Length: 506
Image (cartoon, rainbow, N blue to C red; front, side, top):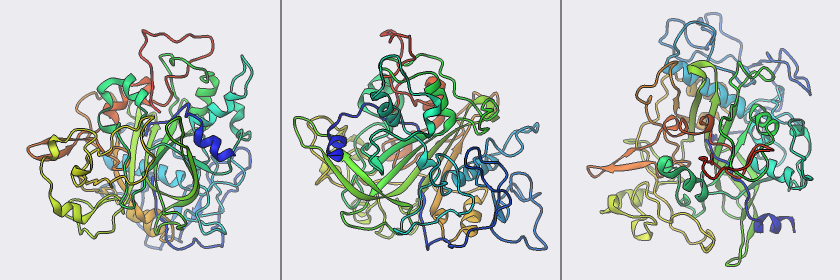
């Protein structure tokens, strides 16, 4: 009954803003040594998991973990801090961080997000475990970011409140109402149609139809956020219908005196295994409840499936860069090949047969493009889902193509992968890190694009495609640049203003 209620009830809120990882063999069962034990209430910072004894001739490393005098490359990983970094290393110094230093921050944040969570706690790492640790069912233990809430959770909590009551910051640790006992995935896009309408044309290729993988299943998207964001939302009593007020202010790591990590939101894309299939190889996997809402035109569905994480985008507000957000994007290396790379058939979102078909007229295809354009790269075949749209069956796979090489200037990915070879980390690829250098309002610092989360963020020119996407370029136009709160919400005591521009990401 619960599953059918989940499937049939209309979604009230969806999240949007912005990991994927793969796995190898099971992590060692012997816990790694730690120097400081974590408290069950407020973990003490400073706990380090020892990876390997540093060699006698170990090179000198700077506070970033980079080789001193070695062009800011990642140094050998010998110990790993499971705590969320607040900012780039040594932010109190009078310096302007390099791209490699910001990439260090991306990798350190990813490590903390994907650290196994402490059982029975929300947002706390278990320092006795290593990344990649698995449970008795053979699936990975729940990670830190997966214990964070979604806006839908707050909505579920608010649904049973009396008039005048609100979800409170201290509700962070209380049980979730009607919790089905597993993650519920239902969204195939990072932005809902009403959000797209509210934001006009500024969202570019982030909005559109579902991405269908080579197995014929849609990718599913969820957004979660840390306690610094939770406290702003619940403390501001944003739980009622209406337009959100202007001036939402999420803290950076220095303003966040309670947790010291600043506001963080993550958006994850998951692929779904075949019915009855186990976890995919080299992928963080978990059993989820996949739902499709029903209405007068169709029955809703709710199915237990194994979901595999294929992309993670991270928004992290830091004091560096003039109190703006740092945007990091990680994709799984099995999604699609890089330009010029060896191209076997076994990619999740790319087909060699389609690549060889070389269809014509792709630049003129309109949405929904239809099956006749199914081999056109990065083309929305199916369009935005509506109330009369059929369920996700018999939809043609989407052909997604990478338009840039995935470099790793700091080589952090290689170092973390070598430190934890039996974890998902070797399968991560850093697509890029974006941030505004302090005081700068010049040209955007490059373009980054998560293939699963921003599949249509391209434009045609001279019979070729180029990336038309920038995390900063879009999100700097929104309320506190995050686009997290729905236009259904307002602060208690304030009325929705039809003349005010709503803030609306999912």
